[in-house]
Length: 259
View: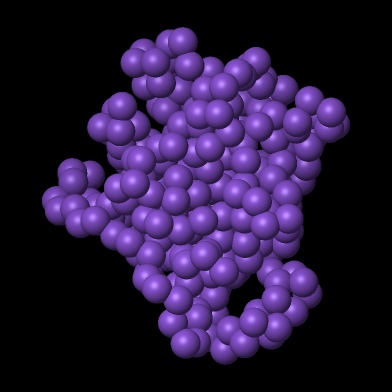
């Protein structure tokens, strides 16, 4: 399964980079978030691959959900964000990703995060996390296992470039996080997973498809993502919530070493 998910992200990434080179056409969804043809083309590629290989597993994907298409999902389903970091993509930055995750019993057990502009891909499967370099022709060239590092004396925080909040700034100050890195997309999870950072606090809105793949990589690397009650973040449809919130995450903190 991991090989199939990886192949789908690489194919989607190739399409995204073609749009990136040509210059995207931007429209806006009902929630005023931007979307481009790259989001839509990448999602089509991924959905076709998943339907072909895993027809019995429901898929919850960002652009389909924006159009009101959310299948009934039981204990096992895929979460897909075809282009995470659309704002960075539109502005010509490189920190955008393709995300596919498999969720089982509320836990992201497998994930692939591909940063096509950076030519790097991360995978998480069980307790094995890997970082893979990708060639100019979208072929895997080398892979190495990654692990979170032990908590250093002065931890490094990684925070959202586009969604930093006063609560985030207060958390950074309270924990003495002198050094911090601002970056977009699910790359924040991957940086913690490979030991380039130690904690990722998120106190603004995210959706499950934004985080599940990166969270799977982090957990496979020995890290943990906790909600504000100190419990592992779960991925379950919230039937009691309004339609716009059924797939929203609560605030969370992703740690490379348990706090």
